[in-house]
Length: 215
Image: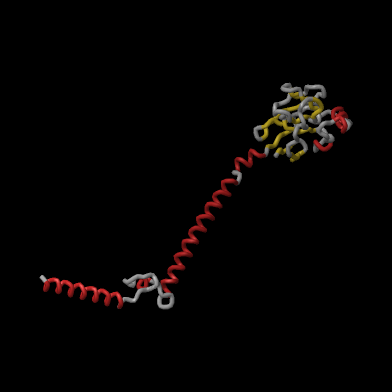
């Protein structure tokens, strides 16, 4: 029994000495690795310049792909915001005034809105030009509202709540909105009632003596 105990003690001492000797011969790197994987896998930038170049190439390729994708998305977005040909066609409309008798008003449609075109008489032109500014809520002279004195072009939308006024009606023989009692004169200016502003004059020009292009 004593001999067996001595043998076991001897074997244990030998094992501890061997293990201690094995660890003492290992050179630990800065990460504490004993398998040298860090050193083995590390790229040597001097000895292996082609691996560094490949890494840079990959990074540049990814960045280029991202930039190209972003550019395509921006171009598509801007293109979607551009007006198509049919939309541009609806944005303007030409009208022939030759068939409108003096003293008459016609209603046409532009961008889905009613537009009043009135062929004014000399008496109407003179009366509107003589209105004092002090009598006007939204002060505009008749001259400012027409391109040619005999033709008045205004949007047929009441500036109060957006109703369509009646032509040739009201206290000033221009337009009358029955919804809330706004009266406009033959220059389309508000003269009485709750509307705060004159009837709007749309952008237009004469393309011929008796033709206009609205928009």
